[in-house]
Image (cartoon, rainbow, N blue to C red; front, side, top):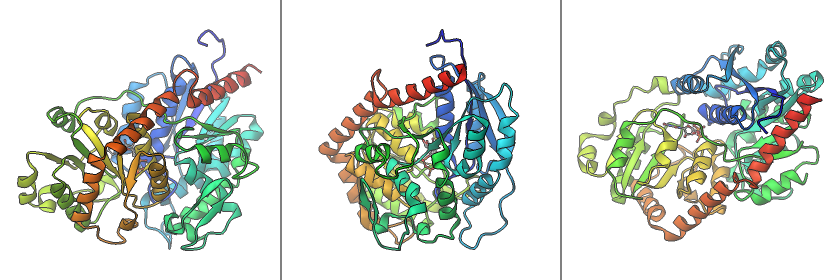
Length: 466
Ligand code: UDP
């Protein structure tokens, strides 16, 4: 492979900051960084330009980008400045979603930016939210364009169907070839066609057929029926080829942090990791109940707290929030931090036994790679549909009665019971381990994700040569 003379010039175009719904931010950036790193690897020998869309809202995103670029000097960054967000929207205050909308509206300018890159591009990998603005012009320019999906195949089947279905509050959604999605698992904004969340998804999905292919960060074993229904045209007859290439491979970052040195001193397979991703905050009351739940569970834990949606605004003092007595009680067995941690490194640590997560799709994929059992606590956006996938695949347990984030105060005693269940179930541990083995297999030499990825690379090379 290395000896092939052609090096397709590939642009990886993230939507940053972004997202498909009220669970935005780094959740989209990370898969694009991983993809860029994979494409630029010596075995794939693509010349990669990473489109960095400015401005960034969170410090985490800005830091991730600069860490990535300094560890990948062979990838060229190209900055693109998006239009400013609309000053107000009657349906949402979510800064990430408003920014996402702004980037989506800037797509025509991005096409101009891409067409001026030198040498000319052969392939573009772009976020779903750019599809309506770039899929047709790039096809006309003769550039291969792949749309990258950063959520589960199951949630993708729902959003891809949006132009053809009407969602009614509380009613389950029937999608051909896919288990019905229960009404209470559909994100509430989707019941409002005028909500910016629904509007962006619906309009962009109308242009999916113009892409050369759709990349899914999932793998055959994890979502077999849905992936097969998408690939066979059952979900929608006019989707382009679907390539499941998950779990996307991680790239090397700086090692070492307080949380890791603390984990080094914990017994093997004894700690529950608690984190709700990059941009999900909980009410102070809910945080205190979660603290009580962790304390009552008697388990060791590493807990990452966020009290605001955008990290730069997070000024809360942990000791004031949880009280000195809490820290006294848990000092032998718990570590609470309010900072960015290296989640992948934590999940890979031998002291970790379970993960209490909101089911952001990157977190789910990272857990599959390690075969770590999950306690799903979906709070918004695609997370309940993702939690259905987690449960069905045997990776985790989910307490449905906890509802959407903020719907009700989940009490510490309820949380303690579920944490204990996740941390002590041998059956769950075994089935999660099986998922982990299959996630690795997907990337072995004849593995399903490896084959899909190779097809994309081969298509890009052939295209470059023609
Ligand atoms: N993450 C991390 N450290 C943190 C918080 C998050 O490394 O302190 C990473 C996590 O590993 C994942 C991503 O940020 O790759 C979060 O994406 P996900 O889709 O799980 O959730 P979102 O943040 O989009 O809600």
